[in-house]
Amino acid sequence: MTTAGLTWRRSSHSTAANNCVETAVPGPGRLAVRDSKDPHGPALLFTAEAWTDFVRAVSGGPSDLRPV
Image (cartoon, rainbow, N blue to C red; front, top):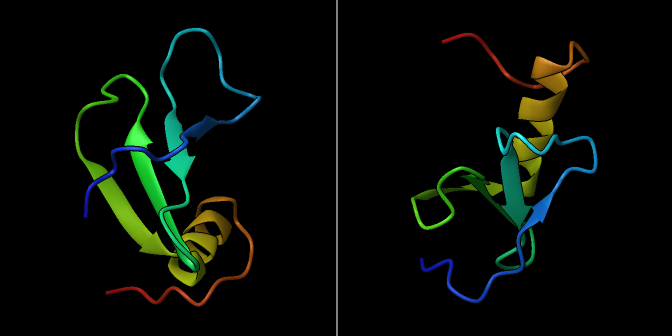
């Protein structure tokens, strides 16, 4: 998948230090994530459900993630 032409967004909570992630929506039910310091570098692609579970897990909320 190419990320060319995607509209990338950064959280309004980000600082000017450029140490955050950016997200884009490449299609229905998908989310692309990249490092803001390397906008031409690789991006990770997640399903919307997987990203929601990840965010819940790192924020301490309930999630469907299981330990491996």
